[in-house]
Length: 300
Image 1 (cartoon, rainbow, N blue to C red):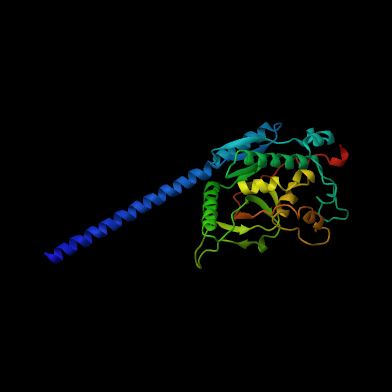
Image 2 (cartoon, rainbow, N blue to C red):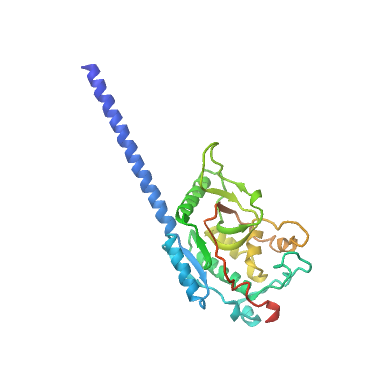
């Protein structure tokens, strides 16, 4: 009888282990589904000009197809409606040192454009909204964003991986996570989540090099607070140069170095920024209202 009882006990133990494994698997599936829902329901601000209804509608459709379920349209500040009087009423001062004589980079060789001013003020207004609503994190996107077909999967994986690395003490808590950008020196970027040798992964998290484009990013509460303390409105310049200067520096080089911009923001709080690779989204090609706008010097 003893061997028989032992066999029965072993079988029962095996069954219990198998059941526990199935229960654990079911719990894991439920956990991942909850994370997926949380990612897809992440508050999202879509910055869009009111006078571009077709572009706005197309962007909302792309966002819905990408799986984003909680999208708010944020009316962009229209550079066409700005002038010196309007800026004074908003308490905004433009940085007059933007134009760099002899610059090789064409954006530095000209004055600020009203479209750049409107874009910067639009993002700043969203930062204020994120802080006012006390959101833990939110997506900020422009209406020329194009999402990869795997956007929902990449977003969910990136947020979960970042949360895990922070919880394990391997990374500092993020202020900003780039979803779409133009990296200036991608070969210099350092991966922060190296997988075990021989393991193939589809998603990587990196410390971004100096990056242009604010196509889409996840802004955390800490990042919103830092940006609002940065003094941006007292020396406004293009967001493409301001934002990365808060976590990195301009690359030295004839006609390219902007030590003046780096010095301008040296006293601002530093951002802890990460980025996803591959890109989760990118800027659609087409006419840019920012680039097509008038230079500030031509209309004051």
